[in-house]
Image (cartoon, rainbow, N blue to C red; front, side, top):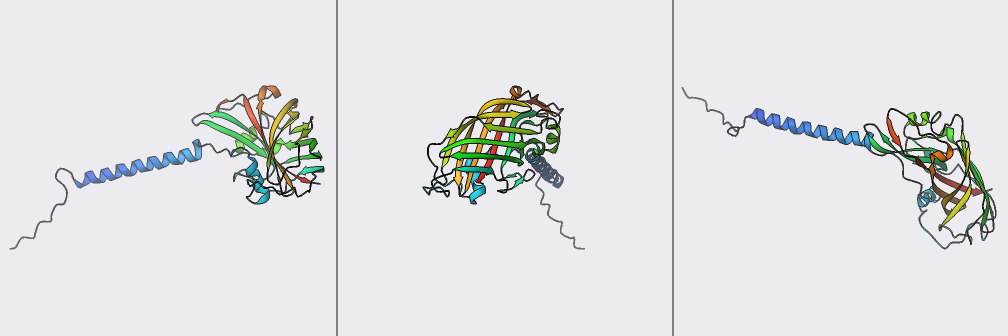
Length: 267
């Protein structure tokens, strides 16, 4: 009888096939853990706050992406900007869930420490803002705006809900207002697309308290629109604002930042 050939054993000496299976299983497990860690960072630990307001980015809402280009083109209003200009809320879009903020808005930013997460930037923005700007020659003689704080939105509806009864307490103090108290002389009618930086001094009313503040503003004339952006640091205690408390919030800084992005068109 002829014996059948014995199959060749391709397993290396001292290294059984079962060991290889365990090695591959371990590698797969490490990859799963690594991917899970990336997912946790992306959805939980990363800072999801939008970028701060920026004049060039804001101008793109008006001119379709060419807001950063300066030119020597005269103002479309001719040699004069005289008259009353109103905040135009028809420009751009506002979608807090989708992080789209190309419209006019007023908002806040504040740094906080969250349990199990660490440092994050809390923010909220509202597109419900109204106001006017009056220009005589090269001087802004009057300006005011009012923001509806009850419609502040962020990426966390729980935070938005807490603001009704904590911190700025929108259920009791539903609006914030700013009124210019000193004229702003820009010296000359700005050319199309050129950024002009000014200081706006006036009275800010927030949380039922009125304080004199000076807001640094960047302005730009784009087509027939005056684009304005600005950031102002605010010390909460100055406006009688108590820092919010929550089991998830370990600490909140003593100051926050008010931000504005406004578009004015002539009446």
